Image (cartoon, rainbow, N blue to C red; front, side, top):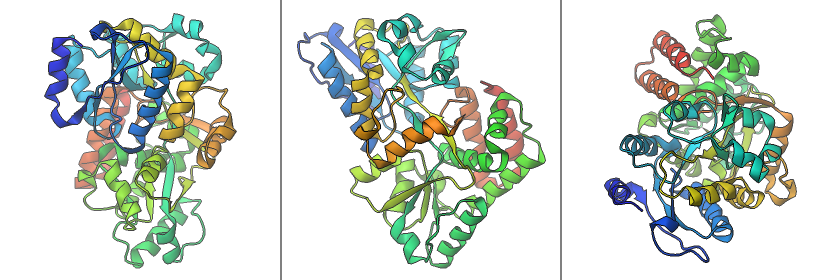
Length: 416
């Protein structure tokens, strides 16, 4: 590891978790180290990373160096990464959301074209064509996805719902609002648990899918749907109403804090991607259920975690071995079994996975796929930041017209 890199990692203090793990046959020295920069530092995310590292140790003669920086959805990690890239101190590889979120890195010449490696490793045949299209710019592919996540999932505390007399799963927004009213009347302090900015953006996206349908929702990010239409206004009003049932300290909560409200019986519902159950189970909480967000029908809102080869990486050959592991059937199984997501590869054996993941694999194949802006599939990083800022402001001032205007401006920054 270079002197500059060691200094940069040390500078993030307690947020940086360094734990080099020697691989079989690896020699000591910086040329044998592969620094993998992620935001997987806790719970099920860390467990998934550990599974992937175990596969890397099996397949590669290099030493893994953990450059993780804690913070949900990479809020802290992305700031540290931007600083390092500006200083010419790129990690050997870094985690990024697949899709439009890669556009700034590509435009800045900060990541390399992996198209030839896709052919060499058989990924062109193993990954769905639509996913490869989302990873590509001008016919070139720039990252290797480790998984596919579903973001429009509503998690439940089954005991809390049963105790409140809620026996039927809500299938529409009206059903959900009625259930939230029931929970509120039963004395549940936060009927719908939520965290800060990006968590709230996820909720807004789920509401807009219900109100606009999958095609109309996707059009919000391509310009085909007018953000100022009456239908969008209605969706924003529904979002505002749902927000009134959430924890009042939502802007101070990371997603794991909001999830704890569900685990502790202080919430009945929790909108979060399907990385949530691995975190629940890692913390001993098993009394949960799940449904697609009411009104979303068979829509599968997706995102994917992927890894890149940065320009100027100290150990490009080691990085290629990491990327090959990430894209392999063995690596994806080791990772996804622990993280709760599903393989990006189409040759996954459903029977190898628990019940939720089997249902997600089926839904990915048969449902209507729409990309997530909150997690970079539909929007550039600049658009995500602008949207999160708009969401955070609305959480405080409740200015519906201001939110509509700000979200329209954010979408204009990130057309995919």
